[in-house]
Amino acid sequence: MSKPDELLVDVAAKVESGQSNQMSLTVITGGAVITGRLAPETVWRQRVTEVLADSDRLGEFAGVFDGPGRKDTPPTHLHFHVARIIQGTVGIPETGGMYRVAIADVSAWTVGDFSFSDH
Image (tube, rainbow, N blue to C red; front, side, top):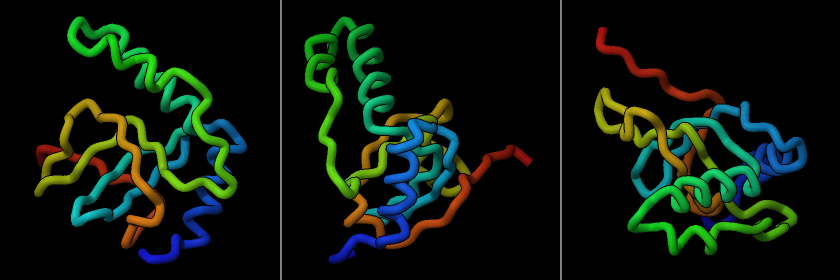
C-alpha cells in the first residue's frame, strides 16, 4: 500500500494503547500470508530479547531489541507473536514465530487467524 490503511493503523494503535496481545489478525504482505496475534511493540521486543539472550549463538543481538522501541503516533508496524506464515495447508513454524510487518506493506488483511488441522 502506498498509504497505510487507516483502519489497520487504528487496530495497531488500540493494541499498543491497551498493551493487549489477544487481537488475532491475518495479513498479506509481499505475497506471504501471516496469521497470528498482535502484541504491543514493547511486549514483542521483550520476548525477542528473551529468546535471543537464551541462545548461545545469538545472545549478543539481544541488546538490539532490549528497550521501549519507537513511540510512533500512529504506529508504523504490526508486531505478531504466536504467528505463522501460511504455506499450503501448513503453518510455519508450527509453534508460532515473532514477526514485524510494516503496515504500509500490507496489501490485504482480516480479523482473526487461521487454524490448522490434519483432517
